Image 1 (tube, rainbow, N blue to C red):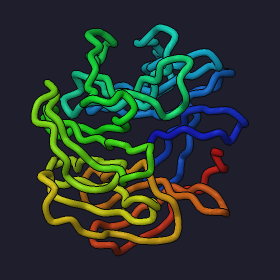
Image 2: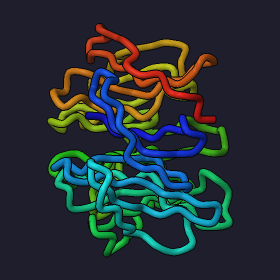
Image 3: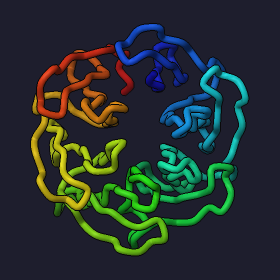
Length: 257
């Protein structure tokens, strides 16, 4: 199954569907915005962000829509939670209340919301997104350049903050289930999907089109990439094989922006 956020009702809610886009089921239905969902590795929980006009927090919900619980608190905007591969920790982005959108920092915490620590490599405006490789000790993230002087880069860092290293120019990195390959989006126009080895070698173009691409996932068997793409006609959840074949759109979504 695939969990995602949609504004089809006019506000953000969470939905679940099978990998072919069928059997869509709504998980949340309250008045606040929910988005950025992520399954825990054992499939027992979904982490997501619930936002108001004043703040945003990380919550948990069971895949059947029950057991909602809040795990971060305060006045900041906490968004985009991602489980480490062992399920013990969550990566997330924090934007201090009162700062402009996009000026976020990467943080990590235990899956119960405790022991929150910064993973920022320096400039608090530089680190965006994040994904973790098995068994959970290495994190890949985008170091953004908001000045326009250089392109975004993909870096990797150990969970303890050591061994910070640039691997490629790109954004939205995601690790395969085997931990051997990284998929990412080209920069600056986000029109291409690429893969590389976990050390940054053997970079290879998988798929190119005129749509904007993000939110990449590997299928569980590491044979396909699933991703969100957008053009003037709408937003789509699509998939393509790692050799560039068997591309098709599996779900059309209402425009988000």
